[in-house]
Structure formats: C-alpha cells, structure tokens
Image 1: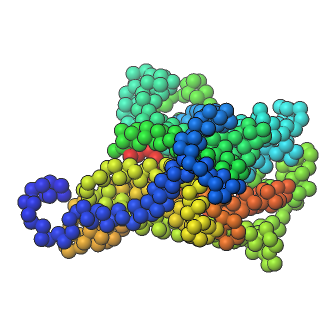
Image 2: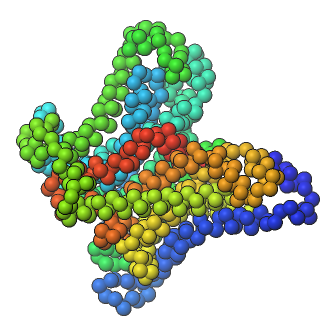
Image 3: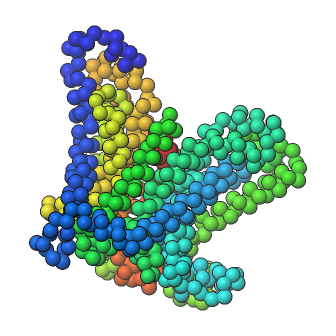
Length: 307
Length: 303
C-alpha cells in the first residue's frame, strides 16, 4: 500500500518529507555497515595482500612479494590435499548422519505420541551445550584409561578390553564425528520438524484415504513437500562442517599422526605453529572460496523457500 | 499405547481414526522404542558429565567403572565459583566467566541496536543496492574466521587492542550483526506497514516510528534474536584463542582449553568447569525454548 501511495503521489511534493528515503536508508544501514566494514572488509583486503607475500614471523623484515606463489605452493602440496580430503570426509559423513538421523527424529517428534513433549523439550539441550564443553565431554567419555565408553563396551562384553579411541588414527575421526553428530542432529531435527509442521495435513489425509502406506506416504508425499527445507539444512550443515575447527582442536589437536587434521586445523597450524602468515592467509582464502560457493547455493535455496 | 489410540490428546492435531490392528500396535511399539532410545542417547552424556563433576576421583578412576559414585562432593563447584582464597585455576575460571558474560552481553546489545535499525531499512525503505547489500551482509556472516584471523591479529595488535574484551566485542559484533539484520528484516516484514505509516502521519520520524511502533511489536522476534546472539558469542572459540592471552580477556572456551592443557588429568575439575560454562546457554535454551526454535527457524530455513 505504501508503494502504491508513493507511485500515486506527484514526484514534486516532497515538502512533508525532510529526508529522501535513500538518505534515511543510508543513515540506518551505516552503523551496521561500519561494524562489518571495519572488522570484515578491511581484514579481508589485508588478508588478500598478505597472501601474496612470503611472510614468516621468524624472519621479520624479509617479506618478498611472491604473487600467487603461496597458492601454487599449497595447491601442489600433498599435505593440503590430505587435509582437504579429511575435511571432506568429516563433512560428508557427519552431514549425512545428522540429516538422516535428524529427519528420523523430526518424523518421530511429529507423531502424536505420549511424552513427545519430553523429547521435544530436551532435544534442544545438546545443541545449546557450548561446542568446547561438548568436545571436552566426549574427550572424557572416549578416554583410553577411564572413559565411560570403554567401561560401557567392556562391561556389556562388546569389546574385550579398553581402547585408546582418540589416540588411534583409525578411530579418532569417527569419535569426533560421533561427538559432532550428537550435538548437531538435534538442530537438524528442530529445523526439519518446523518443515514437517508446515506440511498440509489434508494432502496427507487424502493420500492415506487412498491407501498409501507409511513408507510410500513419506517417500511420495511428505519428502517432496519438505525437500526445500531438507536442501537448506543440507547446505547449511555442509558449510559449517567444512570449516570445522573447535571440536577437533579440543578433542585431538588434529592428531594422532594428523589423522584428524582438517583444512582449518591445517591452516591454523601453518600460521600459528609454522609462523607462516603468507601461506596461512592463502589457505584462509582457499577455505573462504569453498565456503562462499556453498553460501551462494544456500542463499539461492533460501530465496526459493523464503516466504 | 493402546489407550493412546482411543483417546487422542488435544495436541494430537492429526486425529485420524485409528483401529487396533496388530500392525498398528507394532508401529506404535516401534515409535515408542525410537523415542526411548532417543531420550537415552540425548540424556546419557549429560548425565555422565554431571556425575563426573560431583564424583570423587576414587570413583571416577575405578575399574570397573563405578557408574553411580559412592560419595559425592560439591567442593569443585565451590572452589571454582564462590570459594574464598581462590587458587590460580579458580581465579582464571572466574575472570573467564565474567569476561564471557561482559562480551556476550555487549555483543548482544550492540548488534541488536545496530542490526535492528539496518533491518528496518532493508524491510521498509527502498534504496539503490538494497538487494545486493543484504547479500553482502550475509556473505560476511558466513565467512570462515580462519580467513580473517591473521589480519585481525595484526590489526588488533597495531591498535593496542590485543588481549582486550573490546577486540572480541567488535569482532563478534561483525558476525552477529548480519545475523540480526537477517532475522529482524524477516520479522519486520511481517508487521503491516500501515502501522508505521500511521505513526508517521501522526508526526513521527522514521526513527520515531521504528522505536515507538516496530520495536514494541517485534518484541518476541527481538527476544529470539537476542538469545541467539548471546549464545553465538558465548560459544565462539577460534578468535578468542588467538586474540586473548591473559585473564584480562580470556573467555570461557579459552579457559577450558587451558584447563585441558594444565589439569588434563583432573577429570572431575574439567567436568565441573564444563558444567558451569554450559549452565547459562543450557538454562536459556530450556527456559526460552519456543523463542530459540522460532529464531533458529527464521534465521536458517526461511529467507
């Protein structure tokens, strides 16, 4: 209605309005833009600049320009590709698990079950647990000598003796994935439940009357209807998982033998343990590039689901 | 379960007619089994964290493990929080708790004010570059910290802000503000614009209409957003890890990271620190569940 009024009004009549809309908008957006500009855009530019030089903190004053040298060095470095591969493994496995378990939980919480309020009200708690506390908790559960996981599995006879879950390079990544899945499946379930609650009941009931069983009902009616939400959650989780740092840093520091060293851990270690800021900045940019591609997909999907 | 089929509760919105058939019973049994498993999986790790925080080392380090400790103690809670004569670790933990409180509250206040004003412009005003500007804000929100941390480390050093809460407040605001804009823009769009038009006819400026009409009407949205902003700031680790070095600015995640390094074998103390650090967000999430869920859905699923 406001826009129609604006169109109907002759353009000259502006006396009642002291400031044109664009100026008001500029003034309103300026404080936010200032915060973001100072803290994000300036460092982003500076990071690009840094990534073009050979900057090693242990040799101050010697900072030759190397152009794309840092990028080329990384892209031809097997360590980089190993870390990228680990990040991809973590991303794919944890995202698939979180999404499928989350969908199962959401369907469960959507059923008219007694006590479902109980599940609905505590399901948010793992998500609310700070990432560091979650990592610390699982580090303790997975402890090789006193961990409750070992106690549980040996007392029930599933494994014969205690295992060093986090210091075995075959199991460490899986332990991190379990911890991550435990914390983030509830988030997926909450978002997917919101999607399910938006499904038109009449459509479901008509299909039931027509004799659709629970499986075909889900496969052919419910899933297509919530597909937009599923896709959004999928891309969101992929984006978050690919840049994973906190949980791994607390649980394993990227070890043992680099078996949990994902790309963000690798970048951190290059910059702050190798003191190589030039390469660190280049790595940061490479990670940002992947994330921005995912972000573009995410925003496009949101634009489609957005109401 | 069987009574469930004949007596639907009011919350049962999909009250379809049900008959007692073996397949139905099997289906309900399956669903309830799933629910019980889910409840156990969610609760068990929490329970173990809580037990560990009050159990004596004798029980924690026993083999076979003593699941229910014989003796419990709240000494570690007292020591880390209110105990007089705090030692180094308690001192560090208390200042970290205060720093996290100050930083998360400041970030929430700053981003909410700055973000809501901008959100109003995006929801109500027409100006050139509006659509790409909001995408630019969202882009900065999604940028990985690892891409910005090196220059920020240098810039904060040059400004003398390294190891100050102010540096973290500014940095956290830079990613919380776009999030506030995103949610609040959506929220304000759902308020009929006739309402602020009416206020402006009555002589309010744009800012007046925002403060007197939009802000009171969007109180639930503002609450959701504020809670999520607080939780985001409380949770942040990487920036804090790199930019803090003393008790002057270390936050709880960094303090817990230090705990692991220094008292890594005192599992009871680690668990206690974890429980205290988790308390504010968990209590917030539990009490304001509806608001949190509404905010999460609006923030990540709806455009």
